[in-house]
Image (cartoon, rainbow, N blue to C red):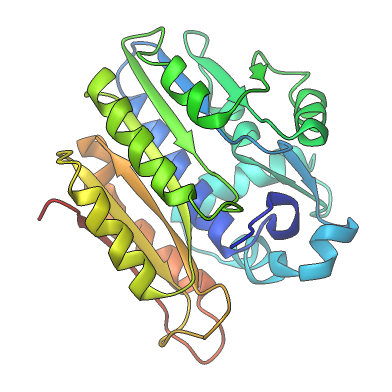
Length: 276
Protein backbone atom coordinates (compact mmCIF):
# COMPACT_ATOMS: atom_id res chain seq x y z
CA UNK A 1 0.00 0.00 0.00
CA UNK A 2 1.47 3.36 -1.08
CA UNK A 3 0.58 6.16 1.32
CA UNK A 4 2.42 9.35 0.29
CA UNK A 5 1.52 12.13 2.72
CA UNK A 6 0.83 14.78 0.08
CA UNK A 7 -2.06 12.82 -1.46
CA UNK A 8 -3.79 12.26 1.87
CA UNK A 9 -3.08 15.46 3.85
CA UNK A 10 -5.84 16.34 6.27
CA UNK A 11 -7.81 13.12 5.84
CA UNK A 12 -9.49 11.24 8.69
CA UNK A 13 -6.27 9.36 9.49
CA UNK A 14 -4.41 12.65 9.92
CA UNK A 15 -7.11 14.01 12.20
CA UNK A 16 -6.92 10.99 14.52
CA UNK A 17 -3.12 10.82 14.43
CA UNK A 18 -2.58 14.49 15.14
CA UNK A 19 -5.33 14.85 17.75
CA UNK A 20 -3.81 11.92 19.67
CA UNK A 21 -0.26 13.23 19.24
CA UNK A 22 -1.27 16.56 20.75
CA UNK A 23 -2.95 14.80 23.69
CA UNK A 24 0.06 12.52 24.20
CA UNK A 25 2.65 15.31 24.21
CA UNK A 26 0.54 17.50 26.50
CA UNK A 27 0.21 14.60 28.94
CA UNK A 28 3.99 14.12 28.96
CA UNK A 29 4.50 17.86 29.46
CA UNK A 30 2.66 17.73 32.78
CA UNK A 31 6.18 17.04 34.07
CA UNK A 32 8.66 19.91 33.59
CA UNK A 33 11.65 17.85 32.46
CA UNK A 34 12.77 18.15 28.83
CA UNK A 35 11.42 16.05 25.98
CA UNK A 36 13.24 15.09 22.79
CA UNK A 37 10.71 14.64 19.97
CA UNK A 38 11.85 12.60 16.95
CA UNK A 39 9.98 12.03 13.67
CA UNK A 40 11.54 9.30 11.50
CA UNK A 41 9.40 9.83 8.37
CA UNK A 42 8.67 13.55 8.58
CA UNK A 43 7.38 14.19 5.05
CA UNK A 44 7.13 17.75 3.76
CA UNK A 45 6.01 19.31 7.03
CA UNK A 46 3.30 21.45 5.48
CA UNK A 47 0.79 20.62 2.72
CA UNK A 48 -1.16 22.70 0.24
CA UNK A 49 -4.77 21.51 0.33
CA UNK A 50 -5.40 23.36 -2.93
CA UNK A 51 -2.51 21.61 -4.67
CA UNK A 52 -2.87 18.98 -7.38
CA UNK A 53 -2.03 15.97 -5.18
CA UNK A 54 -4.44 16.84 -2.35
CA UNK A 55 -7.14 17.87 -4.80
CA UNK A 56 -6.80 14.59 -6.70
CA UNK A 57 -8.06 12.63 -3.69
CA UNK A 58 -10.17 15.29 -1.96
CA UNK A 59 -9.76 13.41 1.32
CA UNK A 60 -9.47 16.51 3.50
CA UNK A 61 -13.21 17.09 3.00
CA UNK A 62 -13.86 13.96 5.05
CA UNK A 63 -11.19 14.72 7.64
CA UNK A 64 -9.97 18.15 8.72
CA UNK A 65 -12.98 19.95 7.21
CA UNK A 66 -15.32 17.83 9.34
CA UNK A 67 -13.16 18.26 12.44
CA UNK A 68 -13.09 22.05 12.05
CA UNK A 69 -16.89 22.14 11.73
CA UNK A 70 -17.50 19.84 14.70
CA UNK A 71 -18.44 21.67 17.93
CA UNK A 72 -16.97 19.17 20.42
CA UNK A 73 -14.54 21.08 22.71
CA UNK A 74 -12.34 17.98 23.00
CA UNK A 75 -11.13 18.78 19.46
CA UNK A 76 -10.29 22.41 20.30
CA UNK A 77 -6.53 21.83 20.63
CA UNK A 78 -6.44 20.08 17.27
CA UNK A 79 -8.47 22.80 15.57
CA UNK A 80 -6.29 25.54 17.05
CA UNK A 81 -3.12 23.87 15.73
CA UNK A 82 -4.56 23.65 12.20
CA UNK A 83 -5.80 27.23 12.30
CA UNK A 84 -2.37 28.42 13.46
CA UNK A 85 -0.73 27.49 10.13
CA UNK A 86 -3.54 29.16 8.20
CA UNK A 87 -3.14 32.47 10.01
CA UNK A 88 -6.83 32.73 10.78
CA UNK A 89 -7.64 32.63 7.06
CA UNK A 90 -9.72 30.07 5.18
CA UNK A 91 -8.34 26.53 5.38
CA UNK A 92 -5.77 26.05 2.61
CA UNK A 93 -2.77 24.49 4.37
CA UNK A 94 -2.46 21.40 6.51
CA UNK A 95 0.39 20.86 9.00
CA UNK A 96 2.21 17.56 8.95
CA UNK A 97 3.35 15.99 12.21
CA UNK A 98 6.54 18.15 12.32
CA UNK A 99 4.50 21.36 12.42
CA UNK A 100 2.15 19.99 15.08
CA UNK A 101 5.15 18.94 17.18
CA UNK A 102 6.88 22.28 16.68
CA UNK A 103 3.84 24.10 18.05
CA UNK A 104 4.03 22.00 21.21
CA UNK A 105 7.70 22.66 22.01
CA UNK A 106 8.63 24.27 25.31
CA UNK A 107 12.00 26.04 25.68
CA UNK A 108 13.55 22.91 27.22
CA UNK A 109 12.29 20.54 24.48
CA UNK A 110 14.00 19.55 21.20
CA UNK A 111 12.63 18.43 17.82
CA UNK A 112 14.63 16.21 15.44
CA UNK A 113 13.18 15.34 12.03
CA UNK A 114 14.17 12.91 9.29
CA UNK A 115 13.02 12.55 5.68
CA UNK A 116 14.94 10.57 3.06
CA UNK A 117 12.99 11.57 -0.08
CA UNK A 118 15.14 14.31 -1.75
CA UNK A 119 12.31 16.60 -2.83
CA UNK A 120 10.38 16.14 0.41
CA UNK A 121 13.36 16.89 2.64
CA UNK A 122 13.94 20.20 0.84
CA UNK A 123 10.26 21.07 1.33
CA UNK A 124 10.60 20.02 4.98
CA UNK A 125 13.58 22.31 5.55
CA UNK A 126 11.63 25.21 4.04
CA UNK A 127 8.54 24.43 6.13
CA UNK A 128 10.54 24.25 9.36
CA UNK A 129 12.80 27.26 8.74
CA UNK A 130 11.04 29.35 11.40
CA UNK A 131 11.44 26.63 14.07
CA UNK A 132 14.31 25.18 16.10
CA UNK A 133 13.95 21.73 14.50
CA UNK A 134 16.99 19.82 13.25
CA UNK A 135 16.41 18.09 9.89
CA UNK A 136 18.18 14.92 8.68
CA UNK A 137 18.03 12.99 5.39
CA UNK A 138 18.82 9.39 6.31
CA UNK A 139 17.36 5.92 6.11
CA UNK A 140 14.48 6.11 8.59
CA UNK A 141 15.21 2.84 10.38
CA UNK A 142 18.94 3.51 10.73
CA UNK A 143 18.08 7.01 11.98
CA UNK A 144 15.55 5.66 14.48
CA UNK A 145 18.11 3.45 16.20
CA UNK A 146 20.93 6.02 15.94
CA UNK A 147 18.89 8.59 17.88
CA UNK A 148 18.45 6.28 20.88
CA UNK A 149 18.70 6.76 23.73
CA UNK A 150 17.47 10.33 23.31
CA UNK A 151 19.59 13.29 24.39
CA UNK A 152 17.15 14.05 27.23
CA UNK A 153 15.99 11.42 29.73
CA UNK A 154 12.48 11.51 28.25
CA UNK A 155 11.50 11.42 24.60
CA UNK A 156 9.00 10.43 21.92
CA UNK A 157 9.72 8.75 18.58
CA UNK A 158 7.04 9.09 15.88
CA UNK A 159 7.21 6.49 13.08
CA UNK A 160 4.93 7.38 10.17
CA UNK A 161 6.05 5.65 6.95
CA UNK A 162 4.22 5.68 3.59
CA UNK A 163 4.06 1.85 3.50
CA UNK A 164 5.44 1.84 -0.05
CA UNK A 165 7.64 -1.20 0.55
CA UNK A 166 6.26 -4.70 0.97
CA UNK A 167 8.58 -5.29 3.95
CA UNK A 168 7.64 -2.05 5.77
CA UNK A 169 5.82 -3.80 8.62
CA UNK A 170 8.64 -6.32 9.03
CA UNK A 171 11.21 -3.50 9.23
CA UNK A 172 9.12 -1.65 11.79
CA UNK A 173 8.76 -4.82 13.89
CA UNK A 174 12.49 -5.58 13.81
CA UNK A 175 13.54 -1.99 14.49
CA UNK A 176 11.02 -1.57 17.30
CA UNK A 177 12.42 -4.68 19.00
CA UNK A 178 15.98 -3.31 18.73
CA UNK A 179 14.87 0.16 19.84
CA UNK A 180 13.12 -1.23 22.90
CA UNK A 181 16.29 -3.03 23.94
CA UNK A 182 18.20 0.28 23.75
CA UNK A 183 15.46 2.51 25.21
CA UNK A 184 12.94 0.46 27.16
CA UNK A 185 11.35 3.41 28.98
CA UNK A 186 10.84 5.62 25.90
CA UNK A 187 7.55 6.50 24.21
CA UNK A 188 7.15 5.31 20.61
CA UNK A 189 4.21 6.10 18.32
CA UNK A 190 3.73 4.04 15.13
CA UNK A 191 1.09 5.09 12.61
CA UNK A 192 -0.40 2.59 10.17
CA UNK A 193 -3.17 2.47 7.55
CA UNK A 194 -5.90 -0.17 7.79
CA UNK A 195 -6.82 -1.92 4.57
CA UNK A 196 -8.03 -5.31 5.75
CA UNK A 197 -8.44 -6.85 9.18
CA UNK A 198 -6.65 -10.13 8.45
CA UNK A 199 -3.36 -8.39 7.53
CA UNK A 200 -3.62 -6.18 10.58
CA UNK A 201 -4.31 -9.09 12.95
CA UNK A 202 -1.24 -10.95 11.65
CA UNK A 203 0.96 -7.88 12.22
CA UNK A 204 -0.34 -7.44 15.76
CA UNK A 205 0.53 -11.07 16.47
CA UNK A 206 4.11 -10.44 15.32
CA UNK A 207 4.35 -7.30 17.44
CA UNK A 208 3.03 -9.09 20.52
CA UNK A 209 5.88 -11.59 20.21
CA UNK A 210 8.33 -8.77 20.95
CA UNK A 211 7.19 -8.97 24.57
CA UNK A 212 6.98 -5.22 25.03
CA UNK A 213 4.90 -4.21 28.08
CA UNK A 214 2.67 -1.13 28.03
CA UNK A 215 1.91 -1.46 24.31
CA UNK A 216 -1.35 0.26 23.34
CA UNK A 217 -3.14 -0.16 20.02
CA UNK A 218 -5.67 2.40 18.77
CA UNK A 219 -7.73 1.37 15.73
CA UNK A 220 -10.06 3.63 13.79
CA UNK A 221 -12.29 1.77 11.34
CA UNK A 222 -14.33 4.19 9.24
CA UNK A 223 -16.93 1.74 7.97
CA UNK A 224 -19.18 -0.76 9.68
CA UNK A 225 -17.81 -3.51 7.40
CA UNK A 226 -14.57 -3.67 5.39
CA UNK A 227 -14.71 -2.02 1.99
CA UNK A 228 -12.64 -4.30 -0.30
CA UNK A 229 -9.55 -2.82 -1.93
CA UNK A 230 -9.76 0.63 -0.33
CA UNK A 231 -8.47 2.48 2.71
CA UNK A 232 -10.70 1.50 5.65
CA UNK A 233 -9.12 3.53 8.41
CA UNK A 234 -5.90 3.91 10.36
CA UNK A 235 -4.45 3.58 13.81
CA UNK A 236 -1.55 4.07 16.16
CA UNK A 237 0.59 1.74 18.22
CA UNK A 238 1.88 3.56 21.30
CA UNK A 239 4.62 2.15 23.52
CA UNK A 240 4.71 3.47 27.10
CA UNK A 241 1.83 5.95 26.90
CA UNK A 242 1.62 8.05 30.09
CA UNK A 243 -1.20 7.43 32.54
CA UNK A 244 -2.67 10.92 32.06
CA UNK A 245 -3.03 10.19 28.34
CA UNK A 246 -4.71 6.79 28.67
CA UNK A 247 -7.13 8.08 31.32
CA UNK A 248 -8.30 10.94 29.08
CA UNK A 249 -8.43 8.79 25.92
CA UNK A 250 -12.00 7.32 25.86
CA UNK A 251 -13.94 10.60 25.47
CA UNK A 252 -11.42 11.90 22.91
CA UNK A 253 -11.77 8.73 20.83
CA UNK A 254 -15.56 9.03 20.90
CA UNK A 255 -15.34 12.66 19.80
CA UNK A 256 -13.13 11.64 16.87
CA UNK A 257 -15.39 8.75 15.88
CA UNK A 258 -18.47 10.98 15.88
CA UNK A 259 -16.79 13.77 13.92
CA UNK A 260 -15.35 11.49 11.22
CA UNK A 261 -17.96 8.74 10.68
CA UNK A 262 -18.91 8.58 6.98
CA UNK A 263 -22.57 9.11 6.14
CA UNK A 264 -24.53 5.92 6.75
CA UNK A 265 -21.84 4.40 8.98
CA UNK A 266 -21.23 4.64 12.70
CA UNK A 267 -17.60 3.59 12.45
CA UNK A 268 -15.51 2.29 15.32
CA UNK A 269 -12.49 3.52 17.25
CA UNK A 270 -11.00 1.41 20.02
CA UNK A 271 -7.98 1.30 22.30
CA UNK A 272 -6.61 -1.93 23.77
CA UNK A 273 -3.39 -3.20 25.31
CA UNK A 274 -1.59 -5.60 22.98
CA UNK A 275 -0.24 -7.73 25.79
CA UNK A 276 -3.71 -8.48 27.19
